Image (cartoon, rainbow, N blue to C red; front, side):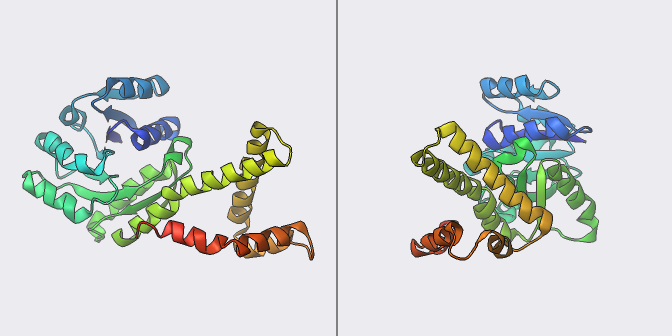
Length: 263
């Protein structure tokens, strides 16, 4: 499979590094305007090809990944229109750029119509732990092979969720913005550890392992979080007192408000 990534920023770089680690049968080309960013990715992933010509980069691509800012998508499409083919798959990672808008851009530039996908991964793709949301306007049986190809590609760098386009935005809030919220919680937990006497690196290590352990426990057991919580809350113990403090501070409603800020 030949994959071209247009854009060498945070998310494009994360995907390339993840695919480079585990994508045994993927030939990766990265195109961008900043040679310093391209060279940095090339240093990490010697097996990839780097170019500064988007049109040349997509020439032999099976899947084209547009990993640029939303306002740059139209420019990219204009740059690649000469070599864009209907047999290719075009995946946009630009948050908020709908499939309808992508189709309109292609029509405005008189491009051939590839199979279009709107996909939102997160930066954990670099370590093959992304949560990626995948949508396409064409859910017909004729497009099923392309849906399978896109899902197979992104499964290499984590878990995937194929969904209607209307759920991609909420998914981004949960998993892409959400990764920052999780990190903020880890920072606060670390600060609490320091206040209680741990050195910062030790407190962070404890917080990270605790988060990993909690997530893996739910993943392996399939338990609802409240079931797992009940296993560590003894009557009159520290855990239930801490949980009640979180409730008193409005933790649950605050977190829900945070995730809904983009809706």
